[in-house]
Length: 222
Image (cartoon, rainbow, N blue to C red; front, side, top):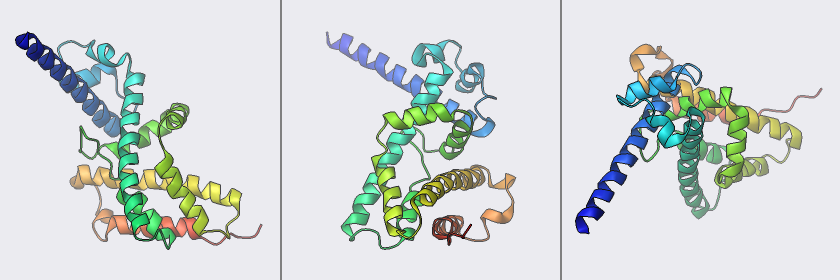
């Protein structure tokens, strides 16, 4: 009986390891090449799997795999934002927009529990650009309360900006974060392939500075 339990545990461990390797490979390839340029065969070749049907066995399809990767990232990000929010609240809450933006930017160097390599932001960027409806549906089904609360804080700290303008700016802000942090992540992944733009100053500080400027810019009259 004990031997049977041990065998079952080994089988479960092997399955978990295979799933993790497939997810890591898919995230890396999509980050580097884009969603449409990566096939199921490419992913299985990266994993060095002999059985090319393993991806469908574990995930059903490439689209299901992408959805699971997105859910992993959202869950991991929510945990980190929640921890930073609690620390911010313990200090009396945010006093400036910069306080909130720093939480978002500093926690946006996303890894996951299974893969801390710098691929997550570029993966998100590629998926957001090609699967926006799927991303929207997925965002509605996972806990985004921490991120939404951070955005609410920004809105409350800028009461003079009209509501509809603020909504637009938060969208601009989100896309700006994704685009700039993706470019920065590409530099971290391969500094030799990038120009000197990322090494002259503290890139993260500059991203925070420009993000605050985007959110707090004066509203021009029509």
